[in-house]
Image (cartoon, rainbow, N blue to C red):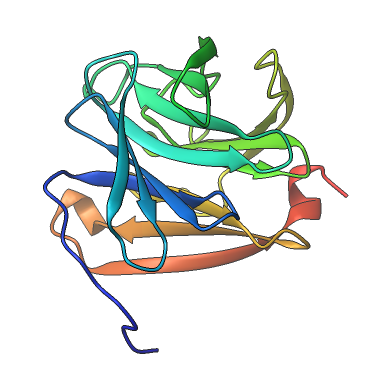
Length: 193
């Protein structure tokens, strides 16, 4: 495809989500900010302060209930857990709960009323994708990430019908970035119908 529109921002965005009403939301990885921007002009319409000072890795929007879920790291050691923060569309904190993904949690997506969350680090048996209850954070289903590579898994997306998408990086042998992969998985593989 071709670029239809592009812009630059003065922060490091991790994650982007549409509210379905003409606005996009992005988080800043290195600051405590959530930005609302016009999806056509990319002009920032609102800047909101988040709880926590940095390391916001992804976000998703529950469009039916106008709620934003944000995944945040406790630190960047690669062995820390994270927090899932829940906000209304004006940036008011509603609640928080620990992320059940305990090794560099990254990736969060609303799939049929549940949250699908991922983690980047590990490999082997620790790199999971999990379906959790969006109110309690209780794990309802867990599966080893199909792309089980160190530093690999990143953001998650859902087409609203059948497929979950994951973007992943490839750092073979811990060296430099050699590829970026997009994977499509049937949501049935995550215990949803």
